[in-house]
Length: 55
Image (cartoon, rainbow, N blue to C red; front, side, top):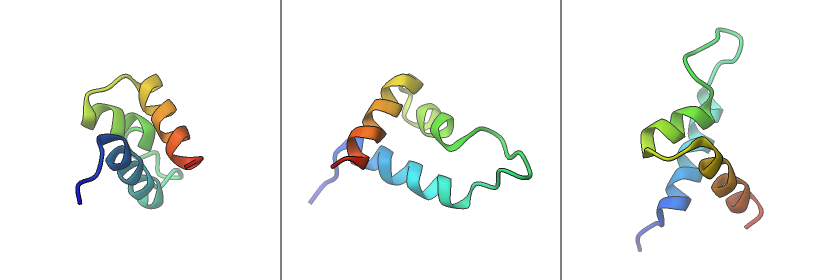
């Protein structure tokens, strides 16, 4: 069973969010990192993640 790109984006965001340390100011926020990794605009990634959350 293969995952859709939208599901992979959501799971990647969830994993990055879990290990991101906001106190140290690590690189970019998880949403931006997912957008850069998948080469999509951040607005589109945000919409996809919101849709996957409500799934």
